Length: 70
Image (tube, rainbow, N blue to C red; front, side):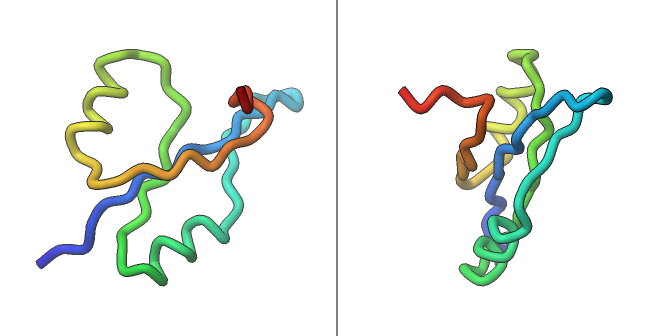
């Protein structure tokens, strides 16, 4: 049996060149729990988001400045 694929959203920052970033602790937590982490690129095309949803077994929304807390 394969480990579950767990998507993890990334933060998006523009410090000159746009950058996607993620603290390694998220990846480590998924591995420790027995999953296979999939670091997600920040895309906005519905077809790409739907593809992520069709493949992943779970999702962690890591938060950050680009996701409004409300």
